[in-house]
Image 1: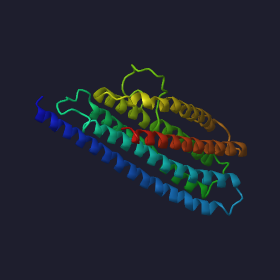
Image 2: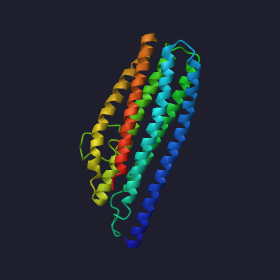
Image 3: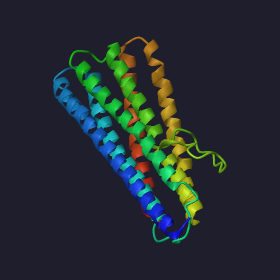
Image 4: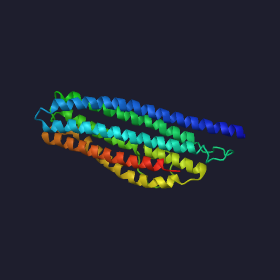
Length: 276
């Protein structure tokens, strides 16, 4: 490959990564807009249920409102991590690369994998927004002890589980360096893939520095899986006051999970943003 072709390839790869970044930003903005609509509905539902005496229903609606806000914050940190990772990838085609170095590792492909995967995350956010709107509609006519209200709370818990896996990793990190690219999935998993590809390209050790976050991520996956197992049992249980309160408790635990994951993603994003 001639020096001119290498330079053209370098510029093209940077352009491709910038295109991926733009696509992620637009997808996130659209998902946030839909989520905001769902949250606006829930906010109005709070006005409707507060004069009532069904305290569990009030808590269900209030938890749903809180969950929407936690999801919104989580999206911001997830997109920031993706953006910082892609910015770092662009530097691998910049001054740190010798002019005649051939791009033997498909870094652009690793970035494209992250961009493609993020579409699933944005779909999950849309599902969450839909569930919030459904809860608002149900809360206007149903009591907390109805099957419909209990079921929608369980669906929101399931959304928290799915978001955790989409944002962080779908599979546990076991420290095996020989596993195929993309094995972890999730935004953090694809961040790992990109950092590993950068390391192979320019001789850095970013991958090793990220591994402490991967070990930590296992604990969030454990919590998400446990919550999913618990709410999956609810369709077979009678719609009683105790079960309504229990579903509300699980919704509160899902909020805690999202808050912890959001804080984790903020730290991971800051870490990648400080890499040289």
